Amino acid sequence: LAKTTQPISMDSYEGQEVNITCSHNNIATNDYITWYQQFPSQGPRFIIQGYKTKVTNEVASLFIPADRKSSTLSLPRVSLSDTAVYYCLVVPQAQAAGNKLTFGGGTRVLVKP
Amino acid sequence: ETGVTQTPRHLVMGMTNKKSLKCEQHLGHNAMYWYKQSAKKPLELMFVYSLEERVENNSVPSRFSPECPNSSHLFLHLHTLQPEDSALYLCASSQAIGAHNYEQYFGPGTRLTVT
Image (tube, one colour):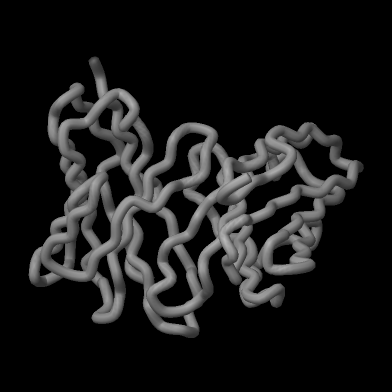
């Protein structure tokens, strides 16, 4: 399983764009990059997933360079309610791997007024 | 009820007690999971069930005993726990296991305290 490294914490202000970069140097060819969000005392929530280039949904954008050794989650115009821990995961797509989501320490994002 | 529900939300138990955690998913999914989240540690996958069959057991001590009577319900039976077992226990479900089923839906968790 590819190991991920992301900053422990980040502070931001309401209305700003937050970019969280995750490195995954030994990502395999068939691995996908997935991001989850977790609020205190709640279960994680899927945000976005991608394989290469750029993916955008109503919540966030995910930028993946050509070498796929890193990815950046972009949260546009954050609000106080975006304060949470954000996890970057590399998910193997092999059938035999099942759905082994391996969570790291995540990035604690604090949005200030 | 929608999504994934867990009961109880909070549980305090002594080391000699026996208790059970319950998880129910209303999403029509075929795979269910138990995770443990201790303070200052990453989420740890404990068990994976697919179509009521256990397909993964991540070296979890036998004092934790899972049960999946059908694809909508998952239990975690607890007995003779240790204080270090105090944690947030999260249940999740996904459509199936295997390729492209990366999206798991988590419940709110049960906050367990072992005294």
